[in-house]
Length: 331
Image (tube, rainbow, N blue to C red):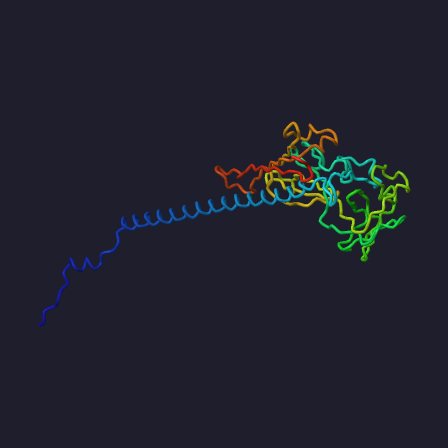
């Protein structure tokens, strides 16, 4: 009989041997440590990315806010002819317009004005600033203003002036402010006729004469005189959603119209004004002469992210400042 080949017992046990329970547990623990470390790195990188992204958003918001605010403040009290001209305001609101009233954008004696934690609807503890400035729609007279005429023809005709729009007209001798009496036409005709809620008279006074002092004082603006809209611009903070924890927004309002949200995430807004006595708050400036003495404005914004990516779950905040000189003032 042929002998049977037998497998040694040790070899059989070697072929059947696997991973022991202890080895399996050690491998699982090491694997969990590696996975946990990877997850920790991912979470840390994600938090860092969110913080960096929010800081970039804050810086971008600051840049936009300062750019738009600076553009308006530089133009306070300016006109396309001569900034030293005293405006003759023939609007019906001329006698009663005040910088803190409903017709504040027609108070031409206050081309720059501010509120120290006061004024229109705003966030308590923050400041408000308002500026009277020329618009961006400069055009010229297409013909001499005829004697006795109550309208001018401007070119280009568009964009159209709307009824009630405040408008400036000037040359190097006279600067006048009126309200459009009706919409301007496609041909460029713009009426400055007198009427309820528009103008007290339908002529512009000569230099050194009283406003609406009589038709004999009427000034005939020559061809190519400048015509441009007058913009009253107000900047302030407002809570857009009624939840202060989400932060406030910077708003811009023009000529008493609906305010427009410009920048989110602004926690505070403060203004200080450069005078002969240095930088002062708005409460120190009490007269039109005081405000006309302002030569520069220092803006301070506190910007805050809407999320909580700071250490300890706090909002990231940055305080930024900028100084803007008024173009029509001498430093």
